[in-house]
Amino acid sequence: MSQAGPYYLRWRPAGTAAPELERFDDLDTALDAVEARWAALREQAPQILDGRKVLILSTAELQGEFDAAPDAAPEA
Image (cartoon, rainbow, N blue to C red):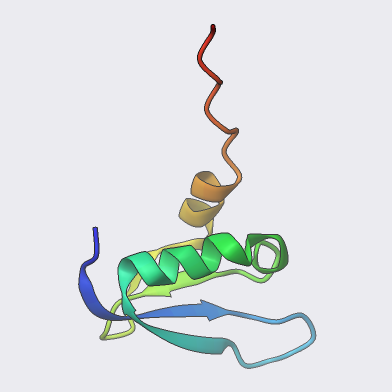
């Protein structure tokens, strides 16, 4: 994928009014960061935004990606 950025990860930590915003140089890096921190982020309305800060991946889309059941192992 590696689409040129910047891209932003936006999430709302519990108990805060303002969202947090983290910048990434490309989309792959942003998605890797979400995947690595998914257990903490999943309840904090994470979103991926493009360089204009327009929504490109919603919380629901990220949940569909990272909460999906792992692929079944091939049978031996």
